[in-house]
Image 1: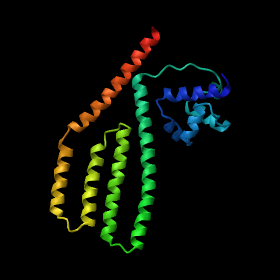
Image 2: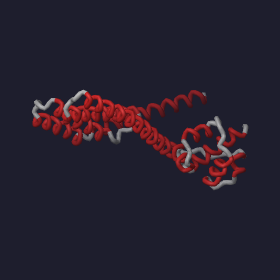
Image 3: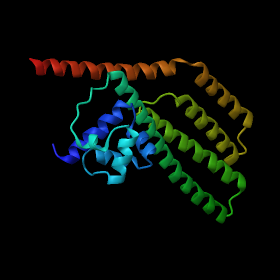
Image 4: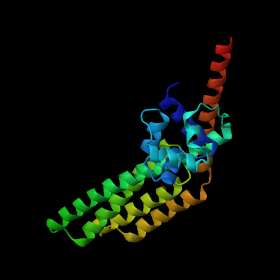
Length: 223
């Protein structure tokens, strides 16, 4: 094992022992998580100053990083917690990127509408529909990432953004009818608790299926 691989293994091992994600370590070292990832893959080496900071942070001697060490494997529960942390950081990054791109797009659309002399009501209605599309996109990402905690919130945001958007763009549509429809749908979203159970059960079944497949594969390998 060469020096790069030894340092990579030590950084990764020490990080996991502390129960930290790459993003959390990057934040503590005031560095990018991409660099941490490269170090742990042995694609690159930290410079001398950074090696000292890493050793100081983990309370070890710098020479420790250049020597081979064995690290105890983390438990399934610890691994699950780390995966959950990583998911949150990835989710925040994806949503943040989408928000920036869509905000810039929204500014461009609003500027174009204003230039064309479209009424403030139309602009406001367009913004609400834009927010509805944004919330729906975020909701779809949450479902794909199997992070169901905020599904109801984003569903409600989509609902009321659409209602206000349609009202502003089509003022002739009866507002009382729209509000009644919105209240009924919102009540179903709030009162119907089985939505969370259904999503959680789907996730649980998928996890159990994956675990059973792993067990079968391991048993076949042992045979």
